[in-house]
Amino acid sequence: MALKVELKPGERFILGDSIITNDDQRTRLFIEGDAPILREKDILRLDDADTPCKKIYLMLQMMYLSPDPVQHHDLYFSLVNEVLEAAPSTREMIENINNKILTGELYKALKETRKLIEYERELLANVKTA
Image (cartoon, rainbow, N blue to C red; front, side):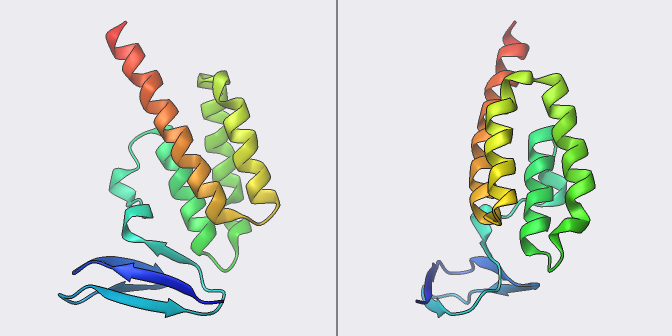
């Protein structure tokens, strides 16, 4: 079954190790195969990884797009340990993300990490107002 991707004018996505940019018209693509795909809205740029949880997302993104995700594990787990030390309340979310990684569901791990980033945003907002 093909994955259907609808792109807005000028929207970009990553297919494998290639960046594809849509022209000036809405486009619908049907993609078959196992190459990793990330839509522009799911891509985090290095410059935007400005918090510990966003750095975890960036590492997961690199794992998802890599032919050898294991090469990113050391840095990923180092970041996770830093977050757990600073905010033990993230443990359940991080365990959920780690379970997705262990079962090879890296895209679902990315989605779960968005929840972690939102939780981090809430924690940081509470620190600033306290």
